[in-house]
Image 1 (cartoon, rainbow, N blue to C red):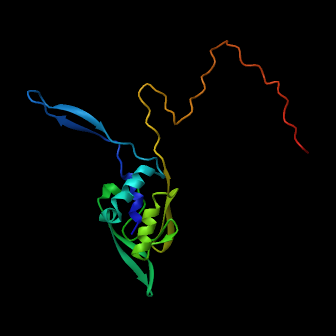
Image 2 (cartoon, helix red, strand yellow; image 1 turned 135 degrees about the vertical axis):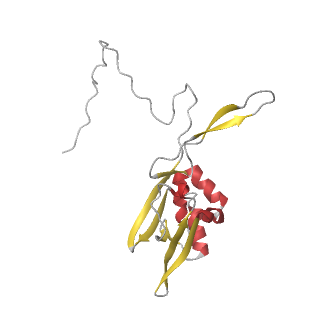
Image 3 (cartoon, one colour; image 1 turned 90 degrees about the vertical axis):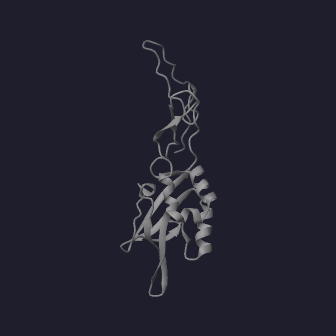
Length: 186
């Protein structure tokens, strides 16, 4: 049931849309609205995960159709029947026929198990979806990270250390350290 948590990878786009702005007595004026950048490959932004969990498991399950997979009377997992819309799932290595067996090592057999696994994503360091494809075990893993802070225009990005500036040509360099080297026990 929780396989779609992985879709957070594709939840945000980077396209810019032109939105006409109509003002009385003027021509429509296009304005650009920038969408947030998606998380880097193999990562999910914590804010996106939290927003998905806050919308609820039912809301999320509107994007995936699953059915229980039972073999010899034993629950195996949930078989993916359909993933909609396809663009939402782009870049996620899940396809119809895959059988999801665990999320973050947690069972998803009962409704309450699936719900607890879903809710736990709000504080989890990663999303790990264990599944079977043609009977072969596989796993998707995405680190859940905080999005980098937005830098104000003209201000340096405080999320990354500033690169050292090279000394101008011919400038003196700092003298070597005269501090004694630490002793090594031998």
